[in-house]
Length: 154
Image (cartoon, rainbow, N blue to C red; front, side, top):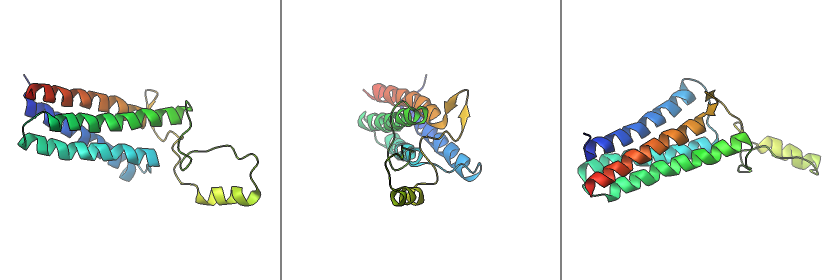
């Protein structure tokens, strides 16, 4: 039977593994992250810090904050997946959009200020799911670990 601290450590290590994987894709695989990819990393970093604190400090509050951090990353992952699949528009700062009605100067300015990595391009996928989709699924599992840890505290 897993104890509260085991569940906390599993959740925090899961976030650490996801971050290490993202950094591996970036620095070893050469896949530069887009803006939404970077946003998905911050909650995992927070979850690691929360996990370290939750091992030392009893109570359900920290595991609940860990669950919130993992859910936030998963939510951004779901949003990013929708942007990649064209289900909804992404942020103007990192997606392509129609250029009709623009002057040549405006179009040139848009091209020159466009980010190198767009949020609506899938850089890597496995089994038909992008990295954002896999992050959303893994984050959902981590939320479960955090919630089980909070329940064991109560």
